[in-house]
Image (cartoon, rainbow, N blue to C red; front, side, top):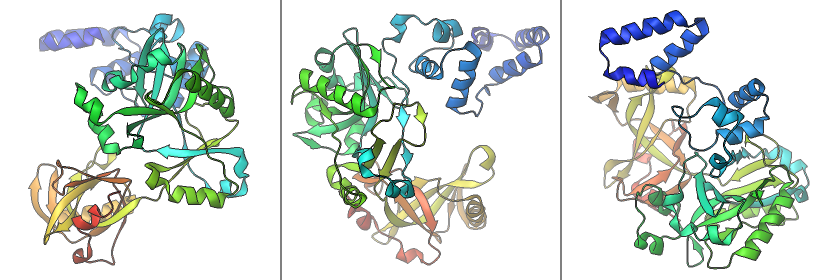
Length: 424
């Protein structure tokens, strides 16, 4: 890789000489990999689990250990297979998070047939998933996307003095001021900042809502049943933290029936929650998204009817189709952009919209086309917040298309005021 990077400063003749020399020295498979790296197309569409399984078989190390060693920050230019996977330096492992266990969307038929007492049920907090690691008197904070975000949340540093060494907690970062959970938008602003001021810490303090324990006393306990991990987590927090600590325990709720669970889900928004998490009491902490033991029952999304105003070409196999759409709402008799969405339509529907875009183009801006405002779509999203950066004055989270409203004229689409009424 270092040799290939150094080619950028070489002449065309020197580059050609280097490539031909390498080609002659490689077999067919090696040439294939070399060319993929050389052209910047080394990325191959395989799942993380399949790659982990392949490495596990190749080096004869268990999959969960491979997954753990691949986590965190490492540079392919300075890291070897030996150092990363086979014989890692224990010091390099201090900041390493564990692979996150992800939940599946709920299978209602399964749950309605099961005994509610078999499950731990808690709120699905509307924040950012993170792992808090305390090892060797240092603390590290990792996002689910494997970004080291320690510096963004300096108020959590106190936990390195309160939580015992050899502890790893899985939880949710939440804005939390005066005992009240804040808006997700507040948390998002913190992530985008390079320097966190005293004003940020005072106006928008953050806590971690802890709901699982992955390591204690330096031992990996992910194979223990959930209820045992939960008990150990309670003891750690009870014995080492207080009400002023930036950590809270996400408590499980007890229900007598699934009807009671449904009612709690309906009230999730009032508690700044996205819905419910339903976990089998005896489940171990798995790697990745595995069906069976952890489920999420999210609140029904908010919806609004909007007008298609712009479309942009897609990527990959959809390069020739217009698949990325911009939608607008009415505001004082004008259509004002409020969101972009590119998911929700099937292949047939995408082709129909693509045909419409090409036949009803008003203006072109590179890969983007402005279209005649004739189509209405129902747009779903998870949350709404005020935003000075958006022309509509409002931003929405995770917008996606539910369906085209063939039954509606554009005059029947919703307004910005309608959207603002959905603010919690």
